[in-house]
Structures are given as structure tokens and as C-alpha cells.
Image (cartoon, rainbow, N blue to C red; front, side, top):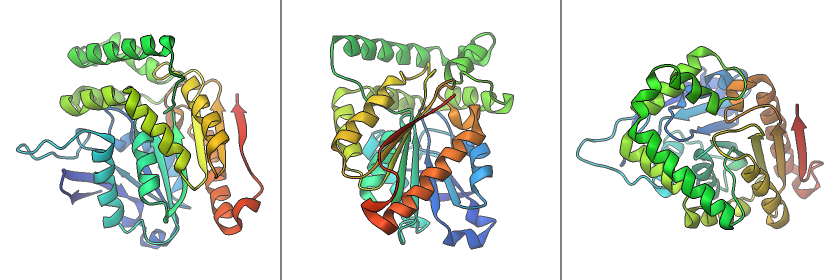
Length: 308
């Protein structure tokens, strides 16, 4: 566990290579967090990946242990969050060679996409988890408007989620399947203690039409294999958006795309079924390595996998 001082903040991060120096030579996995949550929720997944990969997590501005200068408020945008993550990538030299996997969860999928383009020469693969797109019509317009109102309500009364029964309801909205109490407590604590300006900004730009259009365009442009993952019982973000993202990229992108649907999971597959989520990631990483070695002749292509 360390801190890295950049232009935006004093960033808290973890790097498994600190306690295992030989892993510096292994492929690296950078985890990009979702809305109003610190990097602690990746730990069960990291435990399963660390024997084979160098795993790096970090707390974005406004969350966890990362410290923002009281006299300086950084811009809370996709580009701004990508800037601070990019500085960490360069600081740790994760951009040296073709050995970087990027995973983005929820809002972090947008940041991970931006990083995938910036570090295309180093990128082995991208994974986008529960961060989809939607057809632009009257129905989705109403849905986004409702979601915006829900964000405002949640922020104005978020301290109420510390107490029961709202605490349990908050956790159940995020995770359909059972998760460890430790991580349920983490999710609530991170939400109620996150920087209000950052959390508000992220919540609203994540549903902004222009931001979503740019995000769609950028996902299509990723030149490495992309894995789209979603829990089909996600009550936080409609899972159909990730399915739409997969089909859009499949039709327009030059590199392969795979969709994994966890049919009975919610917004947090890395906690709800860590073992099978890790298994799917490892398969994706193996394919990405083969793809870059053998090009388009790699035996994979676009496919959909449903896990009951």
C-alpha cells in the first residue's frame, strides 16, 4: 500500500509487486472502480489473480484513502479521472511492453475505455463490467431522468443508509446474490463518506447523452480484445445496456468482443461469485495473449456466454 502524488491528488494505491517483486515481470491488471466506492472491494478477486498477474488498484479522487488538496478541486470528468490513472500507470511503468489488462466497473468502465485508447500500444485487453449504452428514445430519456433524480435523492439523504433497514436495502440493490458482510459494510461506508462534489459529478456525467455517445465511439475504437460482463439481475444499472454495448462493438469494431452474462447475479459479480468471475477473466486474458501473438487467426472471435 502506497501513495503517489500527482497533479490532482495524493493517490492511494496497492500493487501486489510490492510484496512480490518477481511479479513485476508478469502481465499487469489495473482495476478501475465504480461510482462512490474505494478499491477495497476488488480484494477477493485479487487473491485469485495475484499468483499469475501483477494486480494494481487505486482510489480515485473523492473516494477511499486518496487525499485531495483542500485548496484544489480537480475536475471530476472521465478525462480527469483518466489523467490521474494514467499518471499512476506511468509511475509504475505498467506501460512498458505489451502487458497491461484494464478492468473498469460501472462508471469505471468509461475511465477504463479512455485508458485503453491512451495506452493502446501497451494494452493486452479491456474488460467492461456493468457499464452499458442505451438506444436513444423517449423511454430511455425518461429512465435517465429518473436515474438522475435518484442520484440527487441518494446524495441528499445518504447518511440514512448507515442504519437499518436502509443499509440492507442499499446492499441488496447492488448485490442480488449474497456477499460477505465485510464487503457490504465497505460499500455503504464508501458511499456515505465519499466526496460529495465528486460523487454528484460522476453520477450525472455517467448518464449524460453526449458522454455516452463519446463512450460508445471510444469502446468501438479499442484495438485489443474486449470482454463485456454483466449480471442480468443488476438493479443498479439496467443490464440490457451492456448487452447493447456488446452488439454495437461486435458490429463495428475491428477486434474481438465477448459477452459474459451472469444470469443470477447483480451489480457486483466480483463479490457475488468471485470464483467464476475470476475464471472468465483468466480465459479472456489467455485469449488476449494469444490474439496479440497470432493476430486475427486466434480461435475465439465474438461470442456470448451465459452462466447460470
